[in-house]
Each structure stands twice: as C-alpha cells, then as structure tokens.
Amino acid sequence: MTQGEEKKLPAREIWSILDRTGFAISRLRELELLKYGLTIEQSSVLYILTNTREGSITPGELENITMRQHHSISVLTSGMAASGLVKKVKHLDGKRLKIELTPKGREHYLQTTITSLEESFSALSEKEWLILSTFFTGLLLKSRRMLNLATDLSTKIADENTNLRQGLHIHELWTLLDRTRFAISRLRSLELAHFGLTIEQSSILHMISNRETTTVKDMEDLTMRRQHSISSLLKGTIKMGIVTRVRENKEKRFRIELTQYGKHLYQSLTVNSLEEIFSVLSPLEKEKMTELLKRLLGRARYLLGMAYQPPFFQPDAGGINAPGNKTQ
Image (cartoon, rainbow, N blue to C red):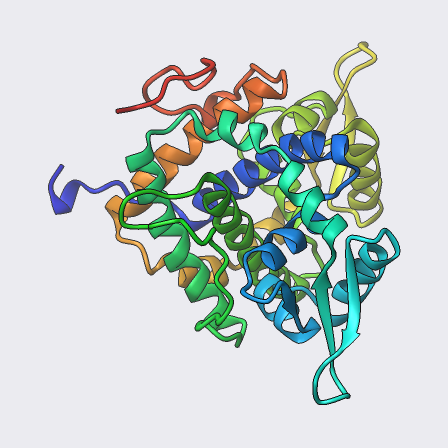
C-alpha cells in the first residue's frame, strides 16, 4: 500500500473500537476479580503498590498515575484500608499521608490470577503486544499532556523483571490499554460537555446514525451493557428529545430513531479532542492498531459469550469470533 493509498480512518471510529475493546476486557477482568472480592480499581492500586520500591505511595502520586480525582482516590483507598488491604500512615514530614501495602494486600495481589487477560490477549502474538504497547504509550502521553498531567511518571508500573525490549508482561499491556482508554475518555467527556452530552449518550447517537435500524437488543449487543443500563440511558436521551421509540408495524418490538433535534445535534458534534490525540499515529499505524483491537474485541466478546459481531465492526478478513486465531 503506497502513501496515497493509505486508508484514512476517522478518529471517531478509532476511539469507538478502542473504547469497546477496553470495556469488553474490563468486563472479563471484573468477573475474574470477583473471586477475590476485588474491583478493577482496587486491583490496580494493589498492582501499583506491589511494583513500587517501598510498597507505598502518596495519594497525590496515586492520583497522578491513575488520573482519577482526589475524592475518588480518597474513597477508594479508604475502602481498601477498611478491608485491611492497605493502610494510611503519616509521611516523614508529619503532614502528608502515605498509602502502604499491608501483608494481607500483598498476599491478595499475589493470589490474583490474570487468566482473563491471558485469554483475551491470546488473540495476538507477543510481537503484536509490543506493537500495541508502543501505540498505547504514545496515545497515553499525548492525552496526559492535553490533560496538563505529568508525563514523566516516577513510579515504575511494570513488574520489576519485565524487559520491554525482550517481552511485555501481559498485565502491563492491559494497564496501558485501560489507562489510555481512561485518559482519552476524560478528554472526550470535557469536549462533549459543551454539547450537554455524556460519552454514553454520544455513543448512542453515533450508533443509531450509522445503522439503518436499531433496536434495544441491538444496543445491548453493540455496547455490551446490561438491559437496565441501556433502559436508563434511553430514558434519559428520550427525555432530552434526542431519540424516540417507533413501533415496527404491529409488532411489539420498537426501533430507536434520532429525532430531528438528535440529527442536528449529532451533526454538530466536534471530535477535536480525538483528532488531536490520534494525530500522534500515522495513517498506517492507525490502521494497524484498529486491526489488532478488532481481534482483541472479537476474542473478548467470544469469551463473554457474545459471538455475534455487527457487520460494521467486523474486520475485512474473517475470524474474529474464533477462540484463538493468534497471528505469528
């Protein structure tokens, strides 16, 4: 493929596949962590603390690494302290607090399996893991700069024995994907706030606009969200006058359509944040990343028992619904 023949993927489409892939794998990770009574956020804190030299970190450093707000980190660490996974101690200066990993927290972390991640990323070869990690790192650093956050993280997030030139620990790849998705969603949320929309509402508009017809079942399958979540989201958008329900002939089933206001709103939405973020990748890199993400998404959906893939999310070559299909 020559430079002039490079496929130009819209930033909105790249973000959609990245967001959906991260969401699907996080669903699998949540199910696995349930066995240990942990959430993804709690597991992430244990992962960070286990891989710091002293097994401790300040709340400010934790906020910086995870990109979460002060209140969110406070609630999260307080809950973990109450469970005995971490403890809050005074810093040497007597003013600041430190979050320390307890023996129970370390034991909990060491017992935690990563089977969901191993199964999800088995759709790719280790060489492709490294390719993706390069893409994610570039996108994450760009997003952090746009969020006015430090890009020189002092805390090593990868396992101590990981050599990124020779291989990539699978948990580190998941961490990069999860944080990249979170950082981009923060920026996208800020942009959509100008239009009075959330990311979920914007996703619904995008979905309906790119399909001839959409039902509630389609929305559940495409977003991988539960029925009550979709129902609540729909009620909100209907109340805003963005979408409407239309009965299909005399059937009980309804299809979801954009109202005139919804169409106008969707056409007026900007994607400046997404275009700026993904500008760090060349057209060929965007195409490669999208190809790899589609395979990961197909694998995650298969593991979740969602074998069906909507036509416009399928790659050109088949096989994303297969259990493995790793490329060497």
